[in-house]
Length: 210
Ligand SMILES: [Zn+2]
Image: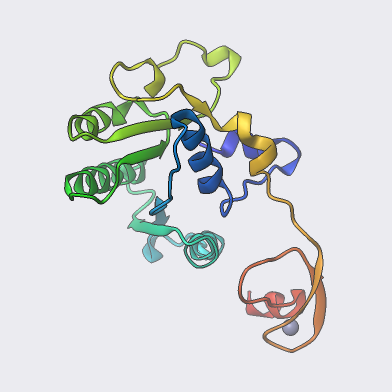
């Protein structure tokens, strides 16, 4: 969903900050304190058999889990096997299962923030609301040419709050990368970097690893 936001001027989302921003937004709507219990992320990765290089994707998922505290659910999919939509379907079914599983656990959550405006989530959100949960939906502002296209916001009885567009939080959610000197874990040399993850390897060591 962030692909469109990410494009201009190399915009990058601060995944560590985003859940807190969305939490604050919903707290302001309610005029109540909201505490963030869990951030779940559902994604897929091509299986080892498919021959795609998945290092970057793995590093990203690892970063979400270790540095941002997300609860990640990553599924391996066979790509190029005539299953182009397999990953999308997996994400939807896995997310929906968790959403309803936790909705049915007494006291697990009172409010869920879904970061997707896909209309396919409407039945699950209605069910969560029937279980007494409040729902917030976060989408992106529809592009001019796509206006009127189906999004979750056009569905009835899915949401308890006015729609939130992540575009409107772009300034706060923007990742500010600081350039710092870090010691390479491989060779011990220092190098300037914007990498904020737990382990740093210098350009030389990264090159020889590849
Ligand atoms: Zn090194």
